[in-house]
Length: 158
Image (cartoon, rainbow, N blue to C red; front, side, top):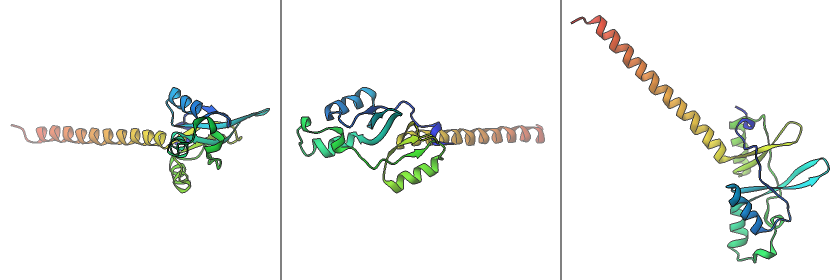
């Protein structure tokens, strides 16, 4: 399965000049833990960074920085790690682990933004797959039990 099949396509954006309060409000409103920071250019919207709820807590709240003196560009991660939508889940997890990130923008092969992938998205998908495997194993066990009881009944007439 490709990462493009499970990524979130509806990405929440903000500009680098967005206030910290507005960024937090957007995260709350959209129930997300990150915002993709992007700039609008004539050829489209281009991601330039990412800001997370953790960035706000660690870089602003914990240091008691006045909220009106900080914008997203002051605390966003600028070294944006991206993954191509055709990448596999295992490969994406390996790259995320190497980079030490929990989320990454997903790009098309043409370089356009396709969505965002988070560790939660991957975990949800893998959990569903494990659930299907568990159901298959239980179903096979029941089939075997039923098959043996039929065989036992026909081979041992009363």
